[in-house]
Length: 413
Image (cartoon, rainbow, N blue to C red; front, side, top):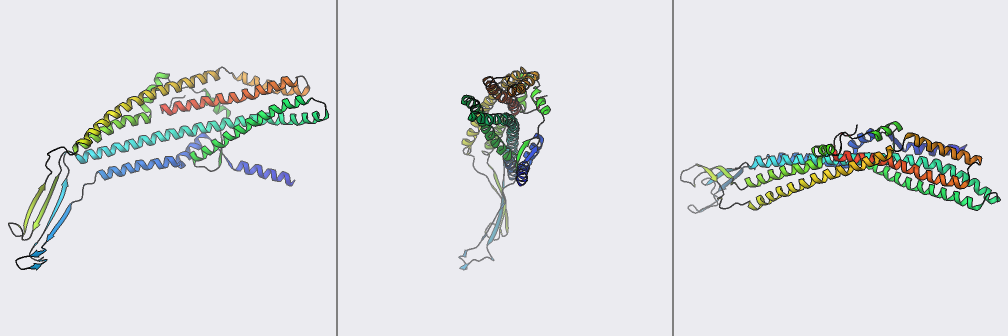
């Protein structure tokens, strides 16, 4: 009884350490807890701060003067008879502040597009990891089912082999199947541990996540097809892909930067007023002061040229990104279509027949109607086929998610 109670406690602790979650539950946790996403949001806040900073003018300059030495009366610091003060303010000319603010606002739009692209990339990673884990657990369940039966059968054959009732060759044949199944189990468990770790990082949840996805939901996802063909998907991607839109916005951004740099060549004006107690033409003299640099050359010409080159560079990069995006969509669509068509050739009846034959082989082998060689050959073939079918289904979901990542709008219906 104590042993049974101990096993129940261990089983309960393993179940309690897992948290069953649907994909939408994972997405909700992801948006709340993902540290990469939360960190990226600060770039938008920093861009807001840059806009605020761009709107701030230089502080006015206040200066004063007092007498240090009066040579007539030979007095030091004759403050009562000689002092003055002046205040000046830098006045921006050529639309410098307007251009600087426009450039800062454009930087915020770039930060928002970067955030959007990161959100898409991480959400795709979340979806693909979730589906990977779902199918690896199905593979583990199927492998454990086969392994349980084959291990019991091997144990029985070992007893009979020791008694001389069956040949050692038969025992070795069964042993090879058990070893293969154990190797499959090790590889599958390794993948499960990695996917669980990735989901923890993505969702910020410490417990292992057990995918909550029914067979009917999985079938609906596999049956979904994209709206429109290859050309339509390319068009949608060009309209919606945040990474490509970022490159387009970068052209506008570089034009605004060039305009700002060009305006820096326009001289600014220092405007001010001054008061002098006794040092000017009149006593308590108040003067208007104006200062402007002499525009003998363009002091910012190098930065203007550099900004113009950046416009041309970003235009070429945008052309490359457009071509790259279209080819990626084309490739992703073809991969999805190939995998979808491949799985479509396998009907539900075929899968049901495979399970019927599997159960029939087990029954007939127990009854002695099937030889060990036939049984082992079938079990080895069934083992490989079962894993391949799970991989085929997972491959369709993975390629669909890659297509979603590129197009970035609802396309599967």
